[in-house]
Amino acid sequence: MPLPGAVSLAHAGGWVAAAADPTAGALGVDIEVHATAAAALAGADLVLAAHERHVVAEAPDPAAAFARLWTRREACFKAGATESPYDLAAGPGLEDTAFGLHLWTLEPVPGVVLSLATDVPDEPVLVSAETRLG
Image (cartoon, rainbow, N blue to C red; front, side, top):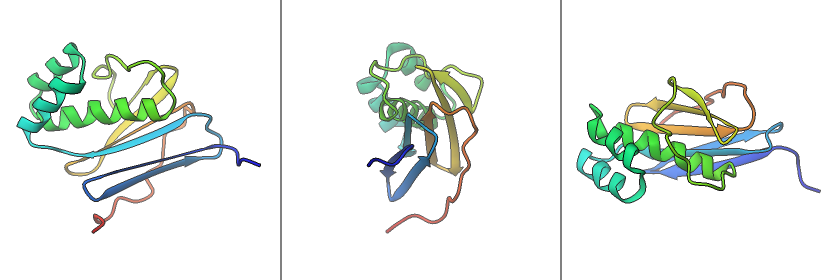
């Protein structure tokens, strides 16, 4: 018998993110370590929509902008979005919505971006952001 709720896992650059919620029907988490500005711009050219590429290129910190957009996109897919997320560069700050999902993006430690997408509107709680693995 399956347990109620949802769990999502992600890892990047020695960091691990885990999200669990017994009340969620949809849940996705992603984590990224900032790349160099050149790598962020190259990555943006490969995977982001034109207006998102513009946001990354014009950002004071292209690496942070790319990590934010990429983690938000991945969190939406993991939470069950079936279309390509669009305009994830918009939004009022840490929380907004897309595909009926609530999105949160934060930087638990400098240079690491974590995004969470869920159908539960409650603000997530960061349990731990300690040292890197490895």
